[in-house]
Amino acid sequence: MKTIARMAVFAAAAMLFVPPASADAYQDRLSELRTRFKASDRNKDGKLTRQEARDGGMVRIADNFSVIDADKDGVVTLAQIEAQMAARFR
Image (cartoon, rainbow, N blue to C red; front, side, top):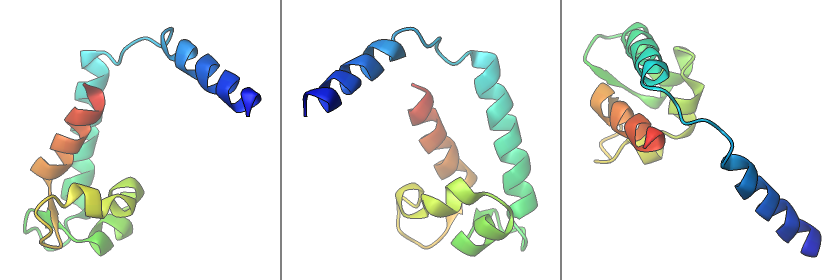
């Protein structure tokens, strides 16, 4: 158990030396996300089903679909995905 605790402390300390994500990197990822969303939205309704996300190669979106789908309507919008992404980059 002491080993696990030591590893956790080491990992936390190591995070102090990781540079924060830059605004440019965030904008690049946002641009890529928008492009991939548009390509994955097969029926062009501005929403993705879990299957559209999976078929479009947006595996993280598909795997985290229930978290991103905040209103639980069975689809995710670009705004919902962007909100999750923004929360991650805070």
